[in-house]
Length: 89
Image (cartoon, rainbow, N blue to C red; front, side, top):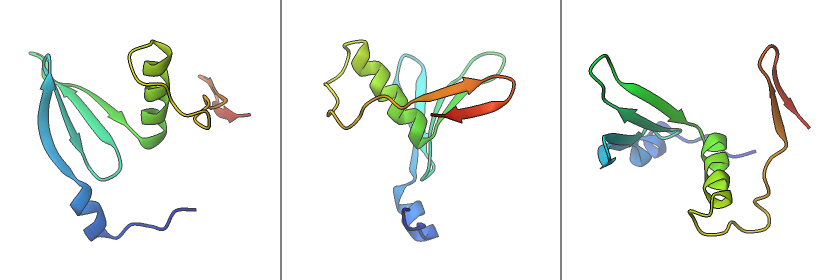
């Protein structure tokens, strides 16, 4: 298990919001990446926690849009039961 980070370590990793492209802004709070797209009726926001970031990288690689992932980065075996929770096999 990873060692808990101190508040100082987290603060050093936090990144201010910056514009990426095409109306999308990104920031990092020390744990998750926040993607924000401002809209007339309120912002659209997505939070990418570490596991979701890994899944997104795998998806990008499967689409042929990124570099190949190393063999140890096989897709996780996670299924989601929308009525009950996560089932990790």
